[in-house]
Length: 485
Ligand SMILES: *Cc1c(COP(=O)(O)O)cnc(C)c1O
Image (cartoon, rainbow, N blue to C red):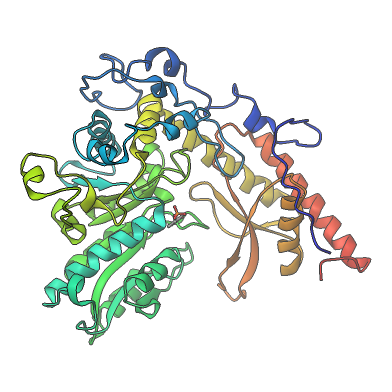
């Protein structure tokens, strides 16, 4: 039976039809509500003595703040965070009416860029990211997939240069079978990056995972020892999209060093663990990476897409360098107007750094950590409820904020439950395929990605009630011969 898509906006939330609506419509709920300091204290950007909770000294700043400094209020949807409620103000804000001047002004010298540097410094200010190993430089591409692409591009050019090939000018055909290693649970953007960069998707060598969904270093070591290949990069995942599992970063970094291979850590989802004192130890070893992807539209509560690529050695950005007469001619560069052209494959870009800096200033690490801890607790509560519910089965332990589970029925029912919830407009939950393990074949699973800090365990119970109720309805329809074909 085809579903009529009725994706109704939550414009008039009535609590019986939309049992979860208040998680996004009530601004007073939960730790994600607008911080009291935000409106009153951040009207002037960087006003002295105004410290966001949990960070070190505020960056020095000379200029005053426009209204968007107040834009840091954040709430969230249930599975996908609703972002800063006033972020449209930030997103629409333009540094200047002239695009050309915008390019210049957003290149190097604007206060916002200086603040973004400070923000990048802050994000590195974590116990998991000790002193000397802090990333030296950052750029902000649109989305984690793009950050991963840039990282593999930089790694490709370095591996090629070591083999005496100028990949940028001549392509990769002079390289002996270039390969990129990642776990079988790595994000598909690694394959896409290899395809786009002329390595081909077959360049990706996937490494098996252990029972906890983490890359197995022994298998990686065996693959690295195989002759006749040019290792381009090892991509470790810190926070797999489905399970939140973190590959053993320290062991992988040792292998990367021994084989002189670029280590990229895809922490698009997991990076935010650094905000939480409790979860940060999961990312031990992150500081050993050559590059790191992080998505602040996931844990970070930013409007999509807000990604950052951190690179340990700023010279490595040379792979993206370009001198363009109308943007960064040499005499302008000598005069200090060097621009950000060499930090991205894009030319014109939105000033995404502004909204990130705004949120970091308003909430601080403590505020963001509190929101993450709350979402982590929600995930644990959901897992507890699933274990206690005879109709549901928990398929993986909770690491960050995802919960992978099943309704007690066959694979087809799982997908139908998700579609019915989605098209009824009542709930949007995820689905995935749980790989075969411990004698059990691959199975379709349902997934919660809990990133709404304003939700409560009662909301999660209501959601799981809906799942069970819908699952029963699907089974009843199947019995009556009315199920999905
Ligand atoms: C979400 C995600 C990505 C892709 O990020 P986009 O911002 O959606 O492009 C990459 N890697 C991991 C591990 C992710 O969870």
